[in-house]
Length: 289
Length: 249
Image: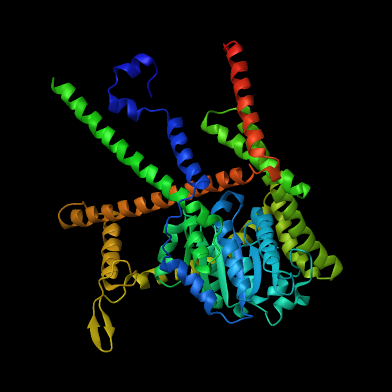
């Protein structure tokens, strides 16, 4: 970082660009994000096979099947995982599946409850009859094992303190073996891997996943090996899911901004490399003189 | 509009703007938002843990349903607190031994099965598929299960393992394998970085979307008013700092 104006004056153009105030870069990224949000272009969204995997499995489930959505995230990951939760719940409610909601992350309990009640109200579903929100309980791995042994002992009451044994939506469900499909929306551990290790591997239900962009590359090996049957990655994945169910929401609205910022970052990376090479060349020429 | 929604919009907008002031420089508004975040998170965690664990999972089953067998896990858990009593600190080791023993017993076989055996099984797939008795080789790079990708995966795994093999000098064919491993690692790091950029931009998009939504008159335009207030406070704070003599102590 140049300390004085004199330092700056002695630098050539490439050096000055490499020492640019980082707040200018923040501003560029901010503008690139804000403008497409205010004036959307509507760039095309191609649906990937991994997102289609989750969608198609839910689509194939008959009415009344049991779908468990574990919203394993906290407010820090809301922008990526909340749109995924909304899209999945809309799809499940539209298919008249019996939906069980829960979370392995204590700080996300309120968020998970909010998204369930909001989408259920929008789709005209009733708590206890069409869906249940179990809330949070400690243990993660051991909690999943307990759910595999006896759901009612693990969650004697739901989030609203209603006895789970009396809920119509849970009729005929005793353990995780009775659940047709589990999707974990994960922001880290505990999440998809925990559900696989302690749940699917032991109790043999089908498992899908949704996750933040940061952890997505680490989950692709599970996808290829068939340990999960689909993966919704980040806001992009949520947008693809919204396209699949034909209900565009916040994720689709954010895709233009996502593309614009990615383009800006690619340009910045290229410029940095060009300026770096120019600087090195001019230094070498200076030394040769 | 309900009062709690309005209040939520104003609080969310204010705290978002306060945190964004970090992009300019560290300041009291940012510190206020940070301290609030920590305080609210800890408070929420304590209340939810108390309600779920102590009341719903321990007190109610024991007192209302007479399930006194819960005294055993409760007793083991309570032993943890012995760490704070110097004379009986050793009692906490019983609780730790229980947790480590049960945790390891549950985790080790399951993790080996899920992340090592399953992944090895996926890595050593047949290089050529047999379809209706005939050998078939698929070239589609976009299909994760194609034969070409199976070969790429196998080369990647083996070469990266060579790179992390330090018992012999990386010369000759080993050097070629290790160099190939570096290439695969660079691609993996690039993919991880790309996804990280996407994730961080998504967070920014999420906050800016909320700020745009809260600029609506139905919320009372908190984005506008709090934005102006934030800028004004930062300018005042800067002016005040300039007037103060530099700290010589």
